[in-house]
Image 1 (tube, rainbow, N blue to C red):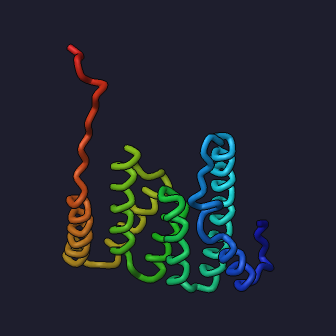
Image 2 (tube, rainbow, N blue to C red):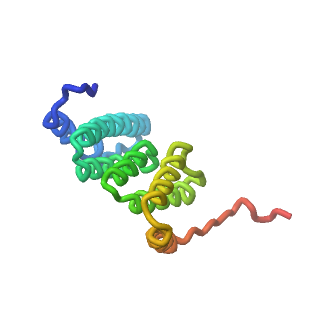
Length: 178
């Protein structure tokens, strides 16, 4: 798939429909490790093609300012690539364009917690800067009391979600070490 500016919405949606489900989903060939590996490799290639198609759909919806559709497609991408910070940046931009800076801050906090919990890393420089920009814009637009209550509300939502998943680390490799 090679995206061009001339692609119509209908053609992109048709391409998207071709990529339903996984390639040879549920197929496993006993005693054929090489074939199974090849299927996994091809499945990943087709998944990347689907992501390209979905990103072109995001671009289309973004130009048309169809932000609900845009968010829906971005969420499809994040199901495939959950740590795609480019798409998270787009989500934050959309929330700002829709005048929902608190939603953007909440989303950033949730994503940041997922990165820290799952991968042990913090968001990229660009994503952290976008977050700081949103916070500073929010503080410029609101009085201190209003901003504090909104941010506290966003923080409570984030903390509620965080408390539902307890992280327990078990390590067998540290036994018998003096």
